[in-house]
Amino acid sequence: MEYIIRQMLLKDIKRVYEIEKSVFSDVWEEVLFLNSLQHNLCWILAEQESERIAGYLIGQKVLDEFSIYNLAISKEYQKQGLGLWFTQSILNEMTIAGCRVFFLEVRRSNQIACNLYTKLGFSSVFIRDSYYSNPVEDAVIMVKDNRKPPKKG
Image (cartoon, rainbow, N blue to C red; front, top):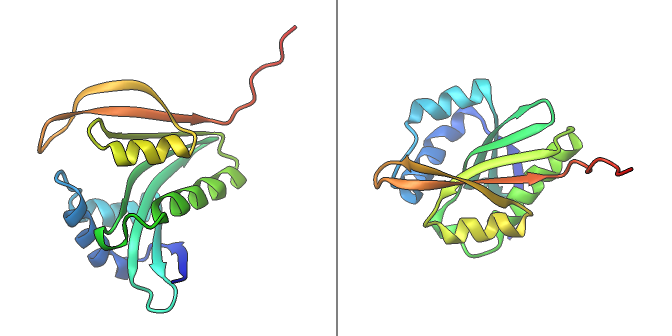
């Protein structure tokens, strides 16, 4: 099956929200997705032929930094390598746009996501205690820093 990545549109919010509710226990409200269309960078991953949405990524670029705020792949599309391919594609796009440092947070217990981000070059740098609710859980703050280290001497 072939997939495309495109900008999220207003018409996509219903399906994106369905994915959100099916994947996460602590869901964003639908209004946050609507606000994201105006204030953030929003992409969807979709089947090329049917345009059925398989996942989404929402983030924000500030100067040379990009933060991933929300990322999900629908359960029916998981375990196919799509999360890795989709996220890497967005990171590549943001690198071309001048981003050098990438941030995200993830539930400490979400080992599948932690492993994905580690494969993408992220490192754990901080634990934010009791960040998530439903259930209460710590967040792992992860960073991918592509800045060149200063030259020595």
